[in-house]
Each structure stands twice: as structure tokens, then as C-alpha cells.
Image (cartoon, rainbow, N blue to C red; front, side, top):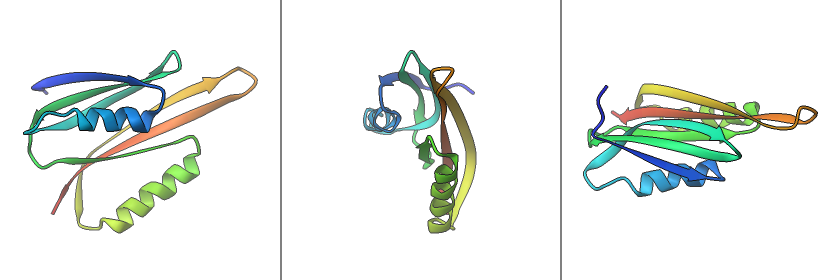
Length: 113
């Protein structure tokens, strides 16, 4: 898929880095995909943008997979009329070999019907 533009954002907190990508999206364009990675203790968010088509995205991120599952279930229950178009996920490990954790992020791309 060819994109009109790609922007790269860096940050220590995934939610604020994604928020920054959304805020910086030019008028008349929308983010159609994210690539997310965690490198050297920093989140890297690559936002792929194109002409606006009405697609929306909801991002979820948590260290606790059970909480992440509850958050997604709540979103889907609160939005029964959406049509899911695409789902992406990313996981990143952190910590030492003695104390390691995994952060998981999920993006749900949808249109309202």
C-alpha cells in the first residue's frame, strides 16, 4: 500500500507519543496505520497518513494483558455499531533477565456505521 506521507515520533510514554502523532496529523489527512516499536528505552511510532477517508483508530496499551483484554472488551461493548477494518499489535520486553516484563499495544482501526 502506498501512503501519502510517513511521520516518525519518539517518546518515553507510548500513549503520549501516539497522541502527539495524532495531534500533528495535517488537516485533511488521517492516520491509516501505525508501526510501533520499543528501542533503547524509547517508543518509536511511525504514523502512515493519507487523504481522509473516515477511518478511526483506538489504541490500547498495558503491561497487564488481563487489563488490556478488559479495556478492549469495554470499548467493543460501548461501540457496537463500528465496523472493524484492521487490527495491529506490538509487544516489547523490558527489564533485566531476573525481572522482565512485556508491554503489549493493540490498535483497532474502524469506521462508524
